[in-house]
Image (cartoon, rainbow, N blue to C red; front, side):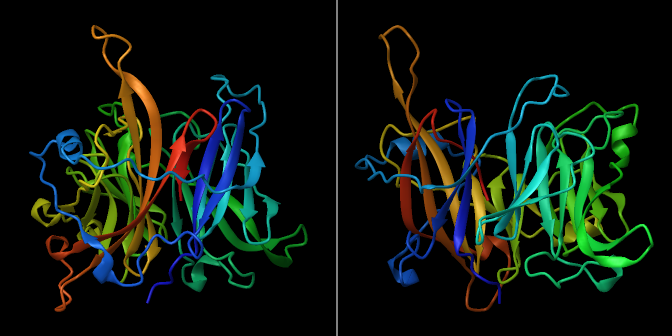
Length: 393
């Protein structure tokens, strides 16, 4: 049985104050789910020949009730660093269970324990990451020297740049909690280490042209799989620390896909439509098996106010809450016309947080085409320049 999460974390950017805040939906106070599944609504499946805009605009619904975003738990500012040639001072949030790690655009790292509200300094990354992606890997067998002595410290966090380039320094690293020796070679306990890791072999190929990593996931508990446009899918075994090619095909997700052990499926956002949740069985990727396209299921939601449109630059985000439950965050805007002769411009912007529950047939069939997604409750927040949601983790 998987453990249900108690919080949904958000990293919010305030460009007016040049500040970032960590905000949390407390799921015990913000009820995203009905007491029973009978009160939920079955979401229809989506096929690629449908038009998402038309699907949403035909539903003439009343405007959703707005609530304020959760209060800031902590405020942060990225420091100015002269080694950052782009002069872009950003912060990134990486999930390590429900405790998060943060980095700035100059490779500095710190850990924030939201329960104790305590900051811990961490080893810096070897090289700053331009568009970092991260996957948390649970603690491995004792051979990796990872310890559970300190609660919440088990496991590793793997960070890779979203677009790999040859000769650009260390672009793949791991934050690992393991034993630490002093200058007398005596074990003085456990500490965090930052390990440089090898890049997939295609990066150094003469035929390779830098392309973004389109999707990534942890498969089998110890293998990180990435799909790169024009390259295919590669796997990194975290125990052997070696790469190998799975195939020339792509995984059916956009961005990160999360595994739900009770359902035996991976969930994320569809690669064919960045605004729709998707489920697929990608367990065979580590053996070089392409996920069958017919077994990939995509869902849509027509319960959206008329005139609301998905924001093209803000893909939907899916966060697993455990036990077959997920929080889906969608971003919308309305359009305003300055004059009858000018194209419409974005007006109001909204973020909608929805609790969904995925169930399988009584026979336990784990194929994605048999899964049913039940929509429970939604919370809608207005967003603007002073509270832009950068990530939901």
